[in-house]
Image 1 (tube, one colour):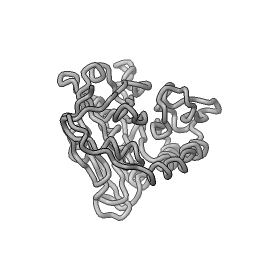
Image 2: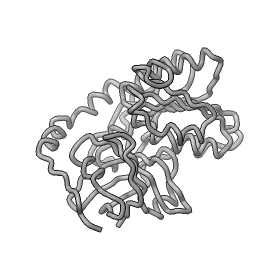
Image 3: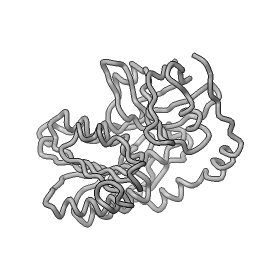
Length: 286
């Protein structure tokens, strides 16, 4: 069983949990994900790893309440246990396997939108620990939806915050912030973009205009997490790829975002029906 050691609501609908999972923590790398099953009858939910501590034997997950199954996960309290936590799954971020001499030549800009800030954090942390210059852009609609800002300041060289309404930081979207940062003289060899699909599409286009190679994470497409359901298949460079077993990170220049967005909405009717019939399971006991 996988005990929840701590729980924090980052926003009214976004929850951070630290879970005891020593074997998973020992193998985890930035960019990978895990599958959580809340109880014996629960749905398999893929969640990107938001942090891990090998010494402590823990992994951190950040869950946004979207449907019935994520509501069940968030309902758990410290001391209770998830039925299953499986992982690490997927491929690690490409910089993890990069030769030291090539890594030393890199300067990264990590661009996070909304919940995408959580999986960006372990990437920034890893790069900082390995002496690689890394800047981070965090974007949200309003300051109340910003997460991980304090944590991110500790693991990056420069943190740039932007909100659509200007309630904190730069007023505008992440694409505007990126252009502004580059205009100020910052130069980057690689961008990593994680967030809503539409945000990744237009941020990738901005990166292409600025001549910055871009990696995107297609974690939001995943359902089963094993490649068997086919829900996460997407066209990358004209070839069909599976986000859960061949990703979740791909060259943003080659991703067919329009196809990915259509696929992302394929279970919308089922999600609505599940929400309407959902009865939250609280108070399971330890």
